[in-house]
Image (cartoon, rainbow, N blue to C red; front, top):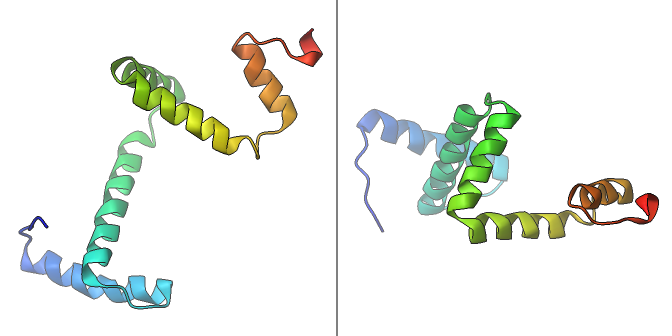
Length: 109
């Protein structure tokens, strides 16, 4: 496992915050699992901070650029997400999505 060097102050804050996480989880958590959780959440939060204020057109353009560089990953992700979401997407929304892709639906002949 990789080692990280951090200041004593940050180490103390991280170590002491573990009790807060355990209080929320209502059970003890081992330190390695706790650090993994902490770092995972930190990267998600930092990405949200960076992208949270970006307008939807810019995000869409970025997503499209990513898809042009990594089509299998991006389009595979989109397909899987759509498949998982089929249970929650109502028929009207599903029909609208199909129309946008050029598929004929019963309501548009």
